[in-house]
Length: 216
Image 1: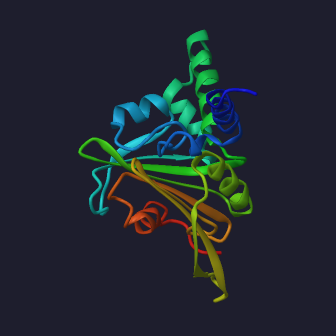
Image 2: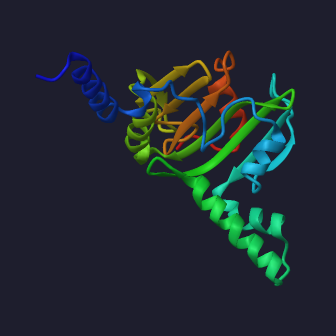
């Protein structure tokens, strides 16, 4: 008969292998490998294809870095220039690879993203992807962070039709993550990462950053 201690150790090892990562170590809130409170320079080092500028008319925000996948060619050209030399071509290849890695998000493709900074620290990221991929993203984030707090509200499209909007939220010590089935338009789902004590205005700031879009 095996000693009790040996049995307990074997059971603990089996559980460690079987349980998902979030049940063993408290996960760190992050977006594409970057967590809240990084500086703008650190953000731009990770994502050099973003364009950053002073924020206007956004309460509590001083700087915003933005990227739209539809403008990837312009973003790559702005970083690497139009030179046909080897150095420029290596820059193009590197930046294109980084964009592809950035856009891949739990089975979805990110369409755009906005990072906002206060006192030179990241306080919030908002991003969008196709509404059809909402369930895939929910499953992917659940594998990382565990079960979400689920809720619903409603949205109204241009035709006046009221639709249920699914919401999933993970509240962690290092920040809050939230996804919504519908964002500023019916074809976009929304992701938000907020630094601790900064999650209250997530939806308003995302609407401000994407004010050019109208509901479909």
